[in-house]
Length: 420
Image (cartoon, rainbow, N blue to C red):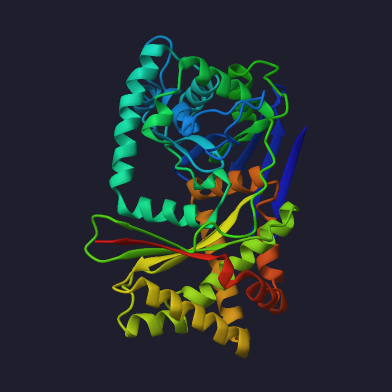
């Protein structure tokens, strides 16, 4: 059965089909030169156990992503995509693994290749050993990157137990324990039809996409439910301050605010995410009073930003920048928050920032890549992409004010600093 989702407000339509294999397929027709497709797995670095609740080594999700491009006949799928004129890539995040390509020509060939290599794993001890050396170098590069260190140190400060604080690539020691059999066990535990989704956005039809999927997928893939352990993360943060030395000319910082009230309902999570996007724009954008105060006093450089991340079981606000005195920046931020709590937020600022976020959301529909990546994020969180427009449109000032008072608790804040 084909489900159609349409937004009168946006003038956009997409379709959802559950393939006979059990794989959900999303087709977003868009008359643009480039077609973007991704095959994603609802599995990332925070998911670390097998069906039998056996722990996998840290970094195995990222390792598996790297090795899937190697084929049994000795070829590499990256080379095949290049021959088709497509630009292919893959990434592993805290919560998902995504294989993707963009193409202006030979779309059918590229989509066939995407489905083929992701659904046909091939691992050997020799291939694993070779990859351990490659990923080992990547891990060393990340260790030498001060911005990566600052980010992970912030997560280490925020979280006591949640695996989000572990590095996505793992460690040298953890990847050395990975074997070809572990990769097969990991694949069977998470790469299941119901735990994956195919998204295609571009100048395509539902029939065209399904014809390719029918030719490449068996009638039934493994549809067993994925086992996910329940993580009991304490409310309290782990450390209020984490410092390290690194190759920086001036200290850099990441201030983390832990979200301890994550809604169980996906729609409510989407509303909270939208609310925090508006709040971040109100409090930390270049047009805000706090930015002016910090910048004009010489406390921050122009590279000052705030980003909010929210998933089914973890969430945090990250405020990052460069400063000669990061601790003073934190003091000023806390003082500004207390001042705003006392005086109340500005309704005019709220309306302006709500419009900014709505405009950014609308702008995202001008890119097939942006549409596909945003759609998969909503799909895996159990929400619907078009509902976000209604959430932003209907957001009210009282909700934002209540969220502001609840979220910014000083006891839920940590600061990570990298000094020269």
